[in-house]
Length: 290
Image (cartoon, rainbow, N blue to C red; front, top):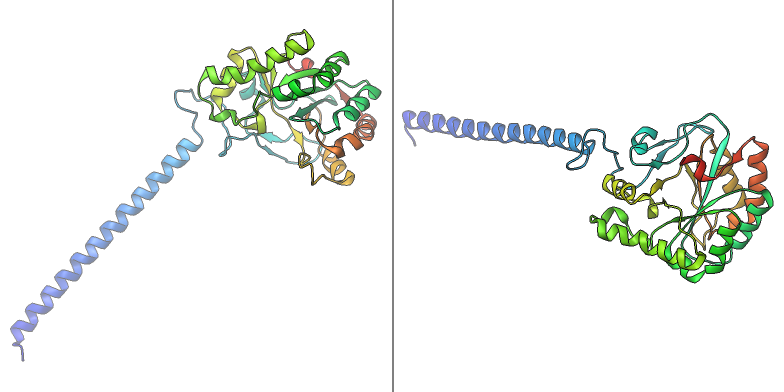
């Protein structure tokens, strides 16, 4: 049996060990707390901060680098990743800030599947101007449709040659080539210079992209109204299309449709009639960019 004095010494030593462990644990938790708080501060600071080397007025992008919209209520302009004023610094637009019932109709064209002809027919019937943002390979494969667009008074805009994620392109040379190659083939096909209107593929962008497009003389166009119409084998019904395109139309809207959509080809005549009945006038995108 241990002596009383020995037991007392053991008890004191145990308390000392436990105290040191407790202090150590408390130190670890305290350090973790402050590091976590500091990391949170940094994340919050830099998630909303402008890009490297930019000033406090830089255009914010979404977390994925995509153009995005937040709809508040039907008939009203949705909020975008950037405001009218922020985009205007780079000659970029997503809608017109107006109460006038004017809208701007745009189509993205990546390939042809027989729906562009009927779309052009409906536009001609209603005497409505549109802007077709086309990729270079589309001009290469469909010169007659491109000529028809130009001859019937539509604007043909630049949607790049390869339809890449432009936000991943960091050099002016690579960015410029995606646009200039489209300009060159458009000139070869039509004998005209391409209007310097640019739409980033999939809406992927960053501030440097906007700057580079501006330096090349381009105006960048996003959109304030679109719907899921690009899956060729999973097209929306007429009712689904009208629910979005009538319910969310608003003054100054830039509408994005895809010319590959069979639904769009089928409904465009009726859609234009319904917009007209709602008091809307389709204007050329050139008027917005004046």
